[in-house]
Length: 161
Length: 61
Image 1 (cartoon, each protein chain N blue to C red):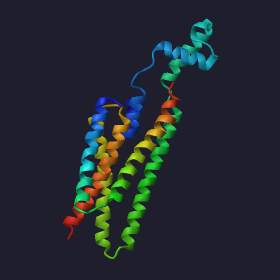
Image 2: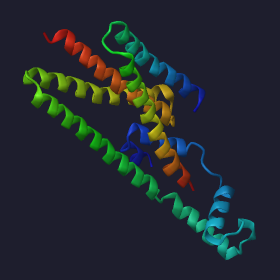
Image 3: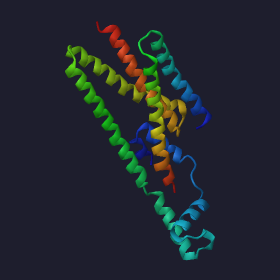
Image 4: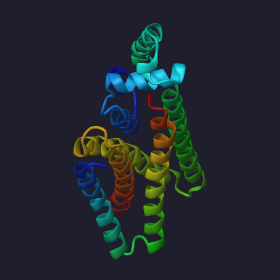
C-alpha cells in the first residue's frame, strides 16, 4: 500500500491516508460484507455463509479500489492536460512577442517557477499539515505555485534589463 | 480538518495574502487580479476536494 502511495501525488497520498486513517474493526467488516453478500446481519448467517464473509474480508484486504485508481488516473491526465495548456499559452506568447529571447526567458521563469513552487508548496504543506490532510496540502500546492510564479515574474521584471 | 491542519492552512496562506497585498500596494496588480487569483485557488481546492470526497471516499468498504 505504501509502495502504491509513493507513486501518488501529494494530494492523492493525503486523501489515501485520510481515508484509511481509522481502520474498520472486524465486526464492522463482517456487517458490511454480510449485508453486501447476503443482505442479512452477520450473526443471522449460517456457518457456511459466515465462512464466505470471512473469506471475502481476507480477499478484499489485498484488492485495490478500482474506482480510486480510475479517479487517480483521470486526475493525472487532467494535470498533464493543464501543463500542456500552460506550455501552449507560453509558446503563443513567445511566438507573438517582438523580442522572442526575452519572452522565452520570461515564460520559462514563470512556468518553471510555478511548477517548482507547486512541488515545494505541496511538500512543505505535507510536513506542516501532518499526514492525511488533503485540503491543507491542496492549499499548499496552489499557494506555492502562485507565489513562485509571481515571484519569478517580479524578479524577472527587476533584473532582466 | 484537524486543528493542526487548520493552523497550517492559515500559516501557508498568509504569505500569499501578504505578497498580494504588497503587489497591490506597489500598484503592480489590481483588485480584480487579486480576486481572480483567490477565486481560482478556492475553486481549485473545492473541485479537488469534491471529486475525491464524493467519488473516492464514498466508495469506502
